[in-house]
Length: 107
Image 1 (cartoon, rainbow, N blue to C red):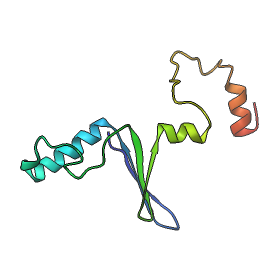
Image 2 (cartoon, helix red, strand yellow; image 1 turned 180 degrees about the horizontal axis):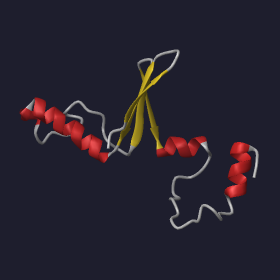
Image 3 (cartoon, rainbow, N blue to C red; image 1 turned 180 degrees about the vertical axis):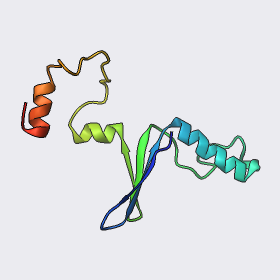
């Protein structure tokens, strides 16, 4: 899935794209459609960045930015090993008070 948004800022246009394995395959496919002799080549041979993980790609004033799970984890000082826990009841979660106090300064 490729998500593209345009947000106007007083500085410039921003373009974000969620780049996952499907987007990587589509990028390769587009290159092969343009030049069929590239069939079977690696991403590097196609002139593409290697795909290592899902990331948010952006560009601010022409400077490419890549945000991965590791970048987010490092920013919030957490490990990347934990995953989302299903089955939590959001109405009775013990974290509701903490989240409300942190975000809204209320309970």
